[in-house]
Image (tube, rainbow, N blue to C red; front, side, top):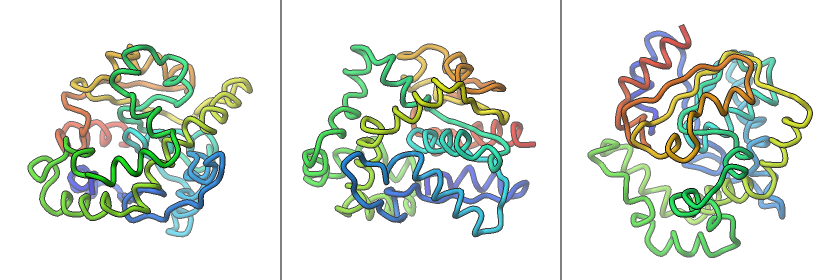
Length: 247
């Protein structure tokens, strides 16, 4: 639902498919594992590639925002024969997040480490889901999308699935990133890195393009005037950037 307005702009030019990430929204909830491997970005990348193949798309571009950008990156890294172009929005590899974490990360992105803990995050969120997701509103998202959000964030299984995405980052995803870096593997398709200029990714980490150049052979990017929820806050600029890159 968050991509709805962007999809409206792009659909006259390309086929647009907007799946919920496994563990999120109305997608399936991965089976729990001690190392969260079934919620890893590697597992989710494989599931989404399989989905696209079953829909008849053997090669395609992939675009992801925030947590979705982490799975999109893993799709391009693990399935290079499938991914023609990669767009990440407000994201860098998990290993980069963890290795560059400082007091600002601990202050502003503390939820990464809280969500990595067992049980307590789900209990805290389910006590008052709208308080945890208070930055989203009908005015920002539109009534239909907001009603859809409310429906899923009050679902215990979905909240658990979303939290497991964070646990996987701390438990196993960074290991996959490190193995790729140690082996010299890179994203070889053209890549576009975008970020919200009124969010804090650039403030905490510096130039995201410079970071992605450690992971991709052909990357360019720029910031978009928006807060974190760029697909809802500035869909015109985001769609224009994606369209120019894909065309």
